[in-house]
Length: 364
Image: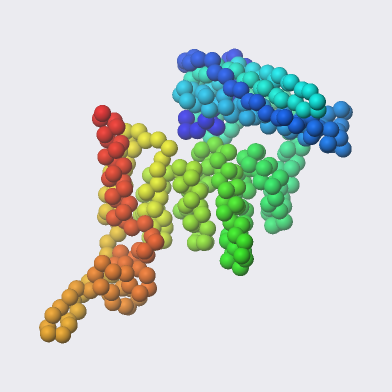
């Protein structure tokens, strides 16, 4: 279980076709919120249908979702992969036009034996026989968003970001990369930079997805993306979400494209969320891989000076000569890396340090 978001939560005490291997303990979560919800309710009477405010309902749904996420987090801390028998109660105290809600969620943390593909696909255990109006409306909005994206007419406003994040519309990811590139180009011509906020929203969008989908989307971009402008923000996304795959890094370092090799070196310095004993060997192999993959690209030569003195210099691929251990005027060193690039030697040093720390932990 890589993330608390992956934990299954169900209101039933059993799961058909699924074996509960171990019952851990009851867990609870409490959410207190809202001191002006009734005031907001009165102010939004134009949104009332059948005596209920849609805005009011959305607020309540948000509180329920928060309580469920707290339950997931509590189960994750116990090492559970499922919560059964979820019950959510709400107590309301109101007066003088104001109210406060106390939401209490309770369930039992358990470890179940289930197919890994359940989390990978987000499938339910059985297909529902009926579909409600809310689901149909959601599908309608989803299809509309994808259609607008295909025709390049989709406006990425706050409501759109919230919808695609809440409903995990991963098919929109290529369109978002296109919009990221446009944002970067726009910032180059504008005083106000909008790209940092776009990246925050992109991270939030990806963070709501199952880990395998999230990793697949970002990893594929890092390996195949040809627009170099969006690589730095994508690297930031990978670092923030701990998207570290040693097989991917090895593939990148083996690439015939030097720019992709450099991406792999930088990724090799990032951290995973957690490490196990198997990672030790992977880290050792990765360190050796980096050590053997970056020979000198420049050519060493001897330059004669006055009084018959000689000194060693190197000739860059651009044709210019540079001092040993110095960068060429074109910005590259003898290995082809620029000053702001993560150097192979730096990556090796960090990996070796990590190996030592992990080894000490498991041997202590």
